[in-house]
Length: 89
Image (cartoon, rainbow, N blue to C red):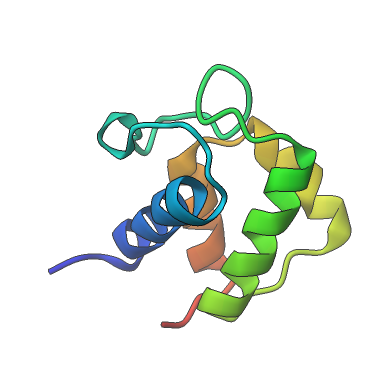
């Protein structure tokens, strides 16, 4: 049975690859992959777009001050953060 964190991870990877046209291989992205440089390599505008999509999909809120620090997180930490923010499906 998939966990909520796995569902969030899959949503992020699908969003980044298919809708944001970011050139990463989905099978090479794991929970330890950094969102910023050295990993998925999302810039600040991509992080804003991703958080907007996450807010709509999982009914969570990201204050503007929380968006820039996301670039220093791993995919797993972001998924855990979304669960902590009260994500719903």
